Amino acid sequence: MLDIIKKNSLHHHKQRYTGSRAYEYLKENYPDFDYAKISTIKYFTKLKKEFYYSHDGFLPLEHKLWSCSS
Image (cartoon, rainbow, N blue to C red; front, side, top):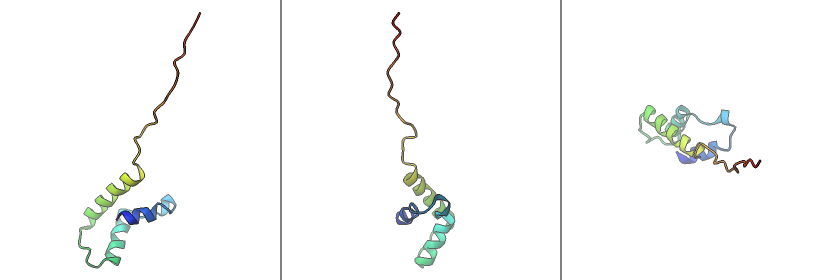
């Protein structure tokens, strides 16, 4: 499934696979794929979040304190 996400990263964000589309793709290309749709969607969503949003969520700021000399 990670290869699907890597291929998706080349596309515009509105044209990437959703969990449902990934499930349909796997069913079409791998006939012996026998996992439940909801399980596949949840797993795909988890992988996608880890792949695209693997940052810390903040930027460390470095600044100098102002010193007032009177």
